[in-house]
Length: 113
Image (cartoon, rainbow, N blue to C red; front, side, top):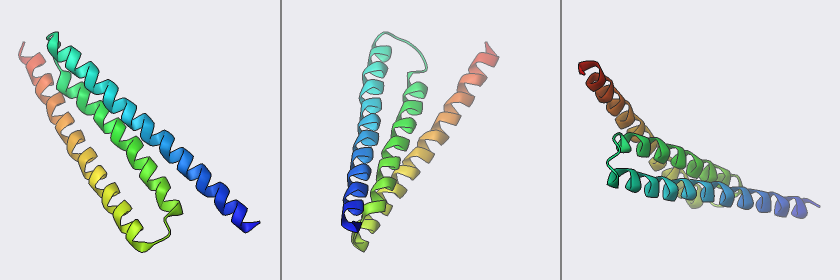
C-alpha cells in the first residue's frame, strides 16, 4: 500500500514538474520570438517586456525544481536542486532589479518630453 502511494506521489510530482518546466520553456521561446520581432520592427521598450517574461518563466522553472525536492532521495541530489533554485532566484532578482531601473529610465524620459 505504501509503495503504491510513493509511486503515485512520484508520478504526480514528475508530471507536474514536466508541465511547469514546459510552461517556462514555452514562455521563454514565445518571449524570444516576440521580442525579436518587436526589435526588428522598431518597437521601443522591447528589453523591459522581455525581462518581465523571462522573470515569469524563471518562476515556473523554479516551481518545477521545488516540486522535485519532494521526491529527491539523496543529499547530493538536494544540494544540486538547492543550487539550481538559488541560481534561478538570483537571476530572477537581478532581472527584476534591472526591470525596475528600465522602468525608472523610461519614466524619466516621458517626464522630460
